[in-house]
Length: 219
Image (cartoon, rainbow, N blue to C red; front, side, top):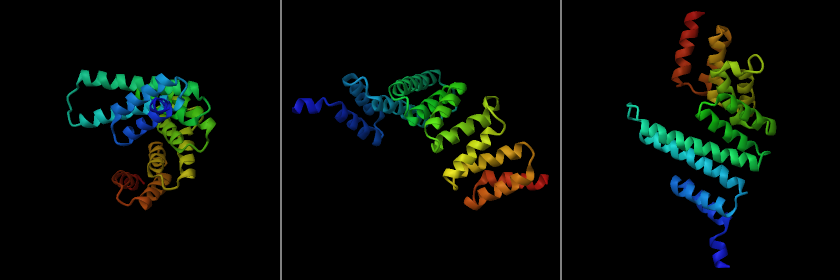
């Protein structure tokens, strides 16, 4: 019985979560891989394995962020981690296709590999399963704002940010992005009101302050 407990997929999975919470991403990845070896249908282990690879790549980037010189070996390593994260999220989604978070994670992984069409599709699938998934609304809005050719209807990015603000009225980034969209299309009166809303939430927001000054000079 003791041996069975030691080899329990759920127990090893929880050990992986404990390592992840402490920032021990490599140990967490090992635990999630071991969990999958014991139970190849454990979708949560695949999802957390993807999170482990993604967190590890973010950690490596942060540790090397001060070096401005391009490092091809580092770039290759980061891309490999991102591809491994994508593969894990794909498997998690295949095993649990009705879970919105799996499609959201898949969207993030696609976006990090510049597969923007796949990313948009995944965010939309996440929202079809959970219309209140705030981060899916926000990420889709950012993706559409940066890649307007992916929009399926006019001002779809604004609709995404509006949905975010319905879920969280204090979401500064979504409100700021809305301001930037209306500013870019020359609606300075609406942009002024919009930046004013941002500054009421965060009076020290430098980008909003700078854009507000620019708007007032143009009016």
